[in-house]
Image 1 (cartoon, rainbow, N blue to C red):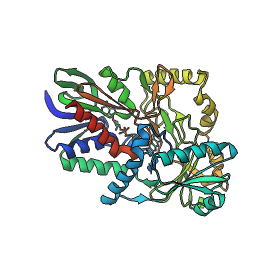
Image 2: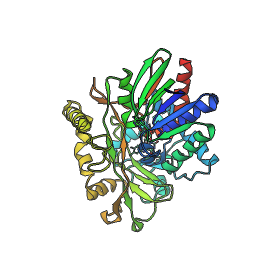
Image 3: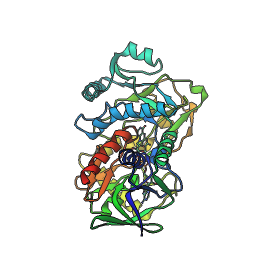
Image 4: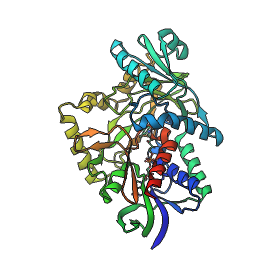
Length: 402
Ligand SMILES: Cc1cc2nc3c(=O)[nH]c(=O)nc-3n(C[C@H](O)[C@H](O)[C@H](O)COP(=O)(O)OP(=O)(O)OC[C@H]3O[C@@H](n4cnc5c(N)ncnc54)[C@H](O)[C@@H]3O)c2cc1C
């Protein structure tokens, strides 16, 4: 049987930053990362908006609040140190009507409590920041929100890992695992592996890996797809990302405009329910078991008496239609037409956990541990931004295991 000191399942940004952190702290440990795909960054870490969030959306008591502001600073410094392109364009959150103002104030207060640099601006000041955006009375400007190429960032972290001596094994998947005495035995798609510690950073499959160890049995992945629509040249430019005030009861931020690292403009991502976990296209990654699981959960979510999902379902369904998506986005920037947005981008799928005991979507990150395993559950947005301090926190937890 092959052996390693630490085995990490999943070479997304979370698995890779954890591997890097372990090697930085304990260079002598043998660290192996298993990735089921032929390459890294093929799922959420390579298919996201690439926004480095500032950290003002989150309840001050949450892990997201604790990790995002420092994650933004650390990943920005990492990009600068490694010559990775970064577009420091900032972000404007606009109110569509009087009704949005209480939540806008709540966002600002949360940001200040979380130590985020923010400016509360009036309509005229908002116009100076982004002349094309429309707001009602007030807006929030976040100067430290920026954009990167997520694939470039993830690949650079992987390169750092390999330089530190981490073995990243592509095309080999975790199948089953068992804690036995002082070690964990893992059956992969190719062999049996024995490891002192195992870390589960399997994204869309983190619940399945955790269940192998009896962890997080009340959680199941409920995938939500994010579609993007790109602007053509006739749309022109924006100075800054433009976001709406979100419904704070939902874990999603609402349809917004982001600027890529190269200055391209896109609308999205939507939060459209996916029918199975890796449903990027109509047949890709199809699994009958997942289809039954996700549609069954979706039905229960929609029919729950206080369902926030039911409230947003008609607008989310409409976003599959290009013209309706542009119409919704025109609440933020009125001077746009459907003809300016014709190209769909690469979709991403959120690894959103559902708590089956309460039938509610989990909003915060979760770390669960056993004697020799650590499970990173619900690494949803902004886990990309938060990845460096998130990894540090996970390795602090590992250190407690000895
Ligand atoms: C549409 C969208 C937009 C987003 N926008 C942003 C944003 O702008 N800013 C931000 O901070 N965050 C954003 N996020 C969130 C961010 O992308 C994720 O939080 C982050 O990428 C999670 O990283 P991860 O390593 O946990 O997951 P992943 O990148 O999904 O990595 C998990 C890896 O595990 C592998 N794996 C799974 N099962 C197995 C197995 N059995 N054996 C071996 N390997 C396995 C997978 O192949 C995958 O490579 C967005 C997410 C989406 C979907």
